[in-house]
Amino acid sequence: VTWETAPWTATTPAGTNVAISVRTGSTPTPDASWTNWQQLSGPNAQINAQARYIQYQAALSTSDPTKTPELNEVELRFSP
Image 1 (cartoon, helix red, strand yellow):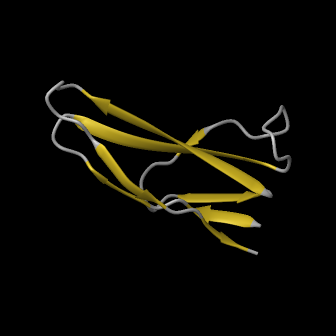
Image 2 (cartoon, rainbow, N blue to C red):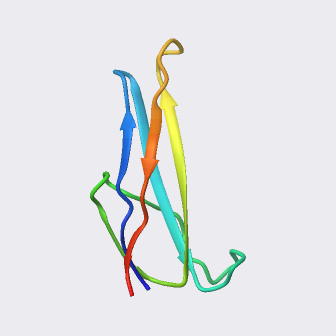
């Protein structure tokens, strides 16, 4: 498939951040043939990768220990 976008929704109080990265491959277990992690520039960023599988990782950060970002939803959109 062609992986198109990975839109997400998050609650990010001041001083917090959510960053989503993706990688793709054609083997069920990630190996050396998989792509490197690609950080998406925002919830509507294009992926434009062709592969059978995709993984995403979320990095949540804060500079204020009294505030926490919250990742609410991640979608993985594709076309056949």
